Structures are given as C-alpha cells and as structure tokens.
Length: 114
Length: 218
Image (cartoon, rainbow over all chains, first blue to last red; front, side, top):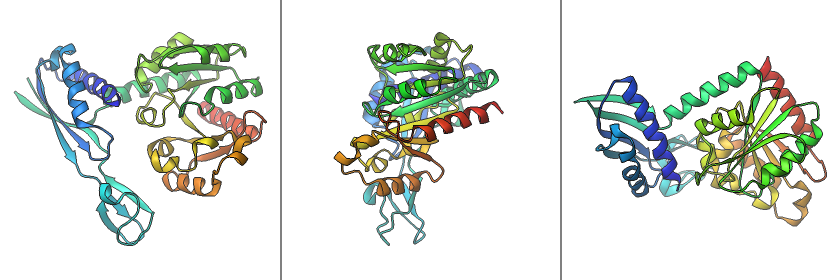
C-alpha cells in the first residue's frame, strides 16, 4: 500500500504549510501526478479520504489530481514519443538511449485555503 | 478564500527533515548510509562481513523491517551496536522515522551508521532518509534485468554491490549486459561485485566506505 505512505507525507507537508501561512482550513488541494509516477489514483483518493479526518485543517478538503502525460526523449534521433505506448525503445529509430522528459512528477500545484 | 501556488514536492516536509538530520550527523562526523535492496539479497550478511573486517571503524546498525527482530539480534551478536525499527506496515523508512531511530541508537562514539531499509526495490528509493550516501545491493540470483524494472533505485544510488558472486556459475547472470543497463541509468555509480561468504571484492567495497567517511568529515 504505497499510496498510504505518500498520503501521509502529503498531509505532513500541508500541515506545515498551514502553520507557515497561518491557514485555518484548506478546502481544495490540487496535485500534479505524472502518468508514470507509480501512483494509482483510485487508491490514492481512498487513502486521502481515510487520513484527512485526522488532520483538522484538511478535514473537509477536496482533492484534485491532474495527470501529466509521460513523454520520452530519444538522444539518438532527437525526437519525442509517448512513454507508456513505446517504453524505453524509441519507435522512430529503435535506440535505447532514451530519457524520460516528464511524467514522473508528484507535485502540490496549489491549494485553496482561508 | 485564497489560492496559494505551491509547486512543492509532496514530500517537501520529509525533505526538510532529511536535510536537518544530514546536517546534524555531519556536525558529529557520522556518515549515515541508506542500504537498500530487495528482500533476501544479503543485506544483513554483507553488514556482518563489513563489521568483522572493519574493526577500527565504529559501526551502528538500524534494522528496519515490517516485523521481527532477527536481523538486529544477528548484528548484536557480532558486537556492533544495533537496534530494530518496526515500520508498522510501511514499505520504506522516511526522514522522521530515521531521526527517531538515530536517537534510539545513540549518535555518540560512532563513525558509520547503516540504515538497513525495508527489503523492497521500489519505495525506499523515493524517500530521502537524511543519509549521506545511498548504497544498494542486487544479488546474482535476482537476475540482470532488474535495472530495466526498477530504474529509480539504480538512478538514486551512489554505489551498487552485486552480491552472492560465489553463486554466479549457477545463474544465467550476464554481467556485461547488467552493468551496461546500470550505467545508462547512472553513469557515476560505483559497482562492487562481492561475495560476503568468500570475501571476494570486499576490500574494494570497504575501501570505498572508508574514503566516503573521510570525505564526509573533510
């Protein structure tokens, strides 16, 4: 249950933000989650709903997940392609010298709070 | 109601705790090593060998597991300071848990502390524990394809131990293909093929540990 650990870390980071920014209530949390970040969104939302009542500042907040598509860069033929569809091997030239450009993110984009 | 743009990693609070622990240990001259691998790769056996070989280095070990204390008992029997940490079902150690474990172990009169992370090639790679160096183990029986399946662990580690080299003849482990796959992910990683059983390769690994400690203190 990998998502449980991530939610615990998210709650901890938000608790600290609330103290720093003197917030009494966070009503909405928007996350950017990469397509290949390893986060299973359904499980993540379940874990969030389980933990948020334990953090007063988060108790009635809504979680919004924005997915960032995974894109890989091929160093050999200098082209971009869809990571999930083709994996590590470039569909244009067959090279394995490829790097993930985006899609591994797990970022708190913004919060709505008072 | 206001909107606050954060753009912060989900683990930002953890990362701050990790940095604080790293600084605290740096001031004390203690190098914390996050030892990561799959279950059964020989983490405790490797540490036992290092403790026996590096008699002049004061070593502490924090054994993190979901349950039991068999590993800590094995390490203590060798005369090293050891504690068992239970993660209560969590698949990895984070910085807060690691700082508590260091407090429980005691950070006086030690040179090296090994955090033996939960046996798992996935989650431990994602959390900064506050360690100064990350060391991973991949044992020969696990196979040469693991860098393809668990790239992050190989990308994050400073050094890689290939363990159970004494069993190599029994497994179809392609050393060249394996090291090529690792170097694509992490060109700077140090690679040490070892057998804790026969002692093969241990000198090079222990040399790296001594140098890392010296560098940490300079």
